[in-house]
Image 1 (spheres, rainbow, N blue to C red):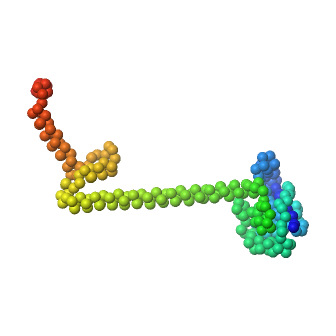
Image 2 (tube, helix red, strand yellow; image 1 turned 90 degrees about the vertical axis):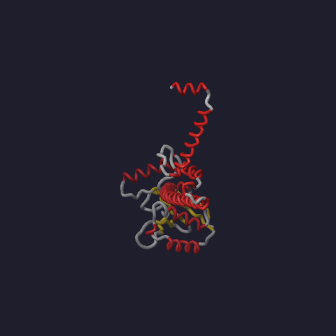
Image 3 (cartoon, rainbow, N blue to C red; image 1 turned 45 degrees about the horizontal axis):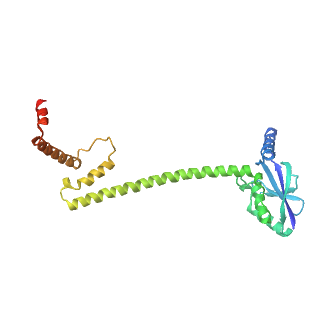
Length: 253
């Protein structure tokens, strides 16, 4: 059994004293003040005096080691004992060789594949708990924001495609209903002017928005003419049976 120790640094290798000071103050406020997190570099020590971490390089592996707590690029902050590994020193060396091949320097990404992600992977293979959430919280939050933005754009595009497809299907469905209705009407009644007027009137009421100019086609006018004839016939009957008062009023006008 061997202790696995996590070493944590403030990231102060920007080349600007002002920026380095700003990062230090951010870490003091967000980590020391409210316990949220900050901008940190991490490395893992197991068997020996060296710590192992990961960084960017143009060629070869990004996995490297240096004396524990002595990385010259950063400002040392603290250490955390994560647990003990059951792996032998030879198994640990084999694990590090495997990780060296799997983590080339050019694969480094600040948000999704940084030193803290590497230490998480190493700890997982050593059989100890991963890093505390606050160590890499800023990178995880940034990575989540990028993923959400990408998913949102994809979902908008997908929704637009689905709406267009649904519109086409609905149009074809309605077109099929109209075609089938006209074919049925022609079979039942050869006369086109007398084909299912009630159905066609109901159909047109649903299709034509309120306030639009009525159609002048015979399909629409046919029922209206019939109604006018009925009203005229009823008016003649009413005139024959009208009361004297109504007759007097009509003739006096």
